[in-house]
Amino acid sequence: DGTPVATHARPKAPFQFTLGAGEVSKGWDCGVATMKKGEQATLRCAPEYAGGPPAAAGPDAAVRFDVELVSWVEWKDVSELQDGTIMKTIVTEGGGARTPDFDAVVTVSWRLTLEDPTGDATPEALEEKEGVVFTVGAEEVAPKGLEKAVQTMLDGEEAVV
Image (tube, rainbow, N blue to C red; front, side):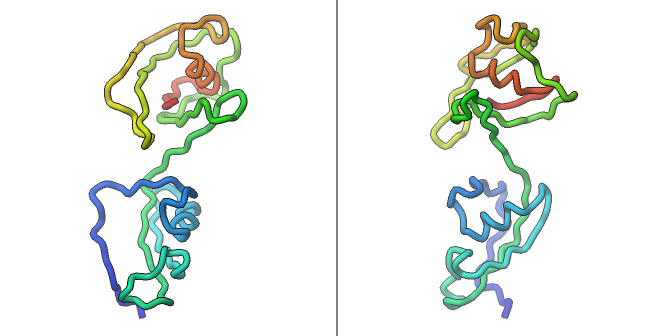
C-alpha cells in the first residue's frame, strides 16, 4: 500500500559499490546501470531483485529505493594484451583529438603510491616527479606502465593509472 516499513536518513558520504559485482541487490545493479550522472530515480524492485523485503512488509512486498547517481569511476584497460595489467581512469579530460605517437616528445608529472586491497591509494607517495620530458618508446625515464598509459592520453589529460 506504499506505507514505509523502513527508512534510512541520507548518508553523509555517498554509498560506493562496484556495478555488476554482486555487492548490492540485483535491482540496484540493473537500475543504476541505466542512470546518468546527477539523475535521481526511484527503483521499485520485486523481492528477488531487492535482496528480499523487510520482515515487516511480508514475503511478496516490492521494495522502493530512492537513488541519486552522484558520480562514478570507470577504469579502462590500456595494456597491450588487454589483460588488466595497466588500468586507467580519467580525472580531467584532455583537449584535442590526438594521442602521442611513438617517438613523440611528451612532458608528464606523476605521483606514485601503493594501492591497498580495497583499491584505495595510500596517501604517502613513494615517488613524485614534475615536468619530466621523454620520448615515447625511446627512453626508460617513466615506468613502463605509465609510458603505455601516456600513449592513450590527450593533451592536458589527468588520469590515475
